[in-house]
Amino acid sequence: MDVMPFLQASFVIKLHVLGAVTAFAIGVVLLRGVKGSGLHRKLGYTWVAAMAVTAVSSFFITGLNGANFSFIHGLSAWTVIGLPMGIAAARRKNIRKHSKDMTNMFVGGLLIAGLFTFLPGRMLWSIFFAV
Image (cartoon, rainbow, N blue to C red):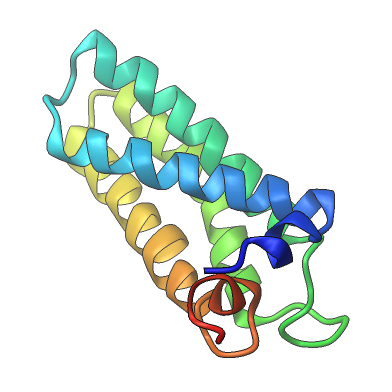
């Protein structure tokens, strides 16, 4: 394991990784924990903030496709739009839609997009798998 690529990365990449790791950890707790409690709400708002930081910061990272956006940025746009929709669903007591929206953002915005960060040549590949 070599953390130098992370330490040498730009501020926006560090912010992006911190947001993603925070959102992932809180997301696991939220998905496994009791729904509707005060803790769920507080952690949920923190998760939304971490997801927003992760999604918005991604628009300033364009290394995969040169200076252009990639399809991963589409997941970020979907997340920026979906977060307030998921909150609105919970406030309207439409828990089924809230649960579906937030779970889909966890899977698409963190798990699927996150898997692409481990491709050869990417920073996280270098940190965890490079020899």
